[in-house]
Length: 465
Image (tube, rainbow, N blue to C red; front, side, top):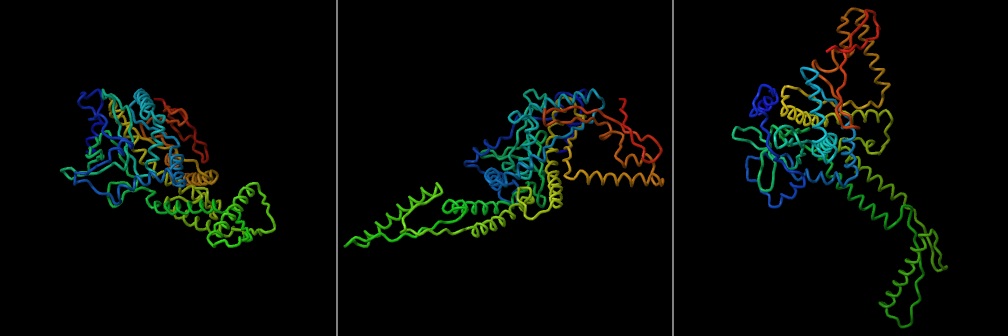
């Protein structure tokens, strides 16, 4: 199957007939809302559908938690903010003219592919949200009616994805719609699972282990809210009231009812007066204030235990959510580096999906042999001085090897990162700006090692194409 897809992208417009273009079709997938409305009376008739390692309903549960739980919501939005930091598009073209045409196609593609959320930048945000919630991402790239370019991108809900086996035992990507399974066209549908279990094709949601801690968190927050409403964050005011006098011949039931009414009137009066910070009464009432700080501390300790379990289930440190459980500044740097490494794992899936859309759009426009690669910009280090110092030490090591003639000048130049081009050979780089949401072709340079003396500063010279 993948060999066929590759062959579609590997043909040029000048050497193929219209019938040889990628076998794309009209849209087959449905959106999240459409999928939810079609589940009434849904029934799976295909017994070859593979089962996941967990109930499919888990995807919907996590989607709801990401909307309602503040910490899971922050986990999703942090993933989006740190993941979509801009990217570069490496275009492998035979000439500058072909690269320029590819950039024009990429810009048109970026502007129209996801109109409801600002084009390609909004689509990337949606994909990071999807991969953070479900552990995978899936997009169907739909061409225009004339099959001349990719017109729209539709995010396919992971909870509606089903994997089946065809007659040859090969995996087939499908979507559950109403009471049937619809096979999605692999030429125009990009699917990526970040984490799978034991070869099962369904992605494992990163927040799967956080479902139970989220339920405990919701329960304890409800109890704390009720406790604060009934009492106070500072303490409890107790009022000891003398019994009202009993009328002669009054029965016990009548006396208890009148006494209760008297207490209610006294309580209502105190409640209104306490709003102004003062309470006035006769000497028949004795006031006593009980502090409840100790009880509040106990509730905080319980809440901290619940939250620590939730943060661990989300693979994030508490400091990423604004909680600092005795963490030092040095440890915070370690946490940030670990967080960035986790974000890179999510970026891989988004990268593959976006590359699929660009390749299909190029192929429909006759640039089937034009290669494309998406590379996200590296997040800024939290300790730039440390990184600069480490880079300096590495460069001095290389220069020392060059002085002892262990390596040649050409080898030293490559070890110091001065390659012939700033991308793979024959590649043109276009940078996608998050601000203007447009690709801009960057100038290529060749770095040449000039001078035989150790410590000579490398100079950058332009390439003559």
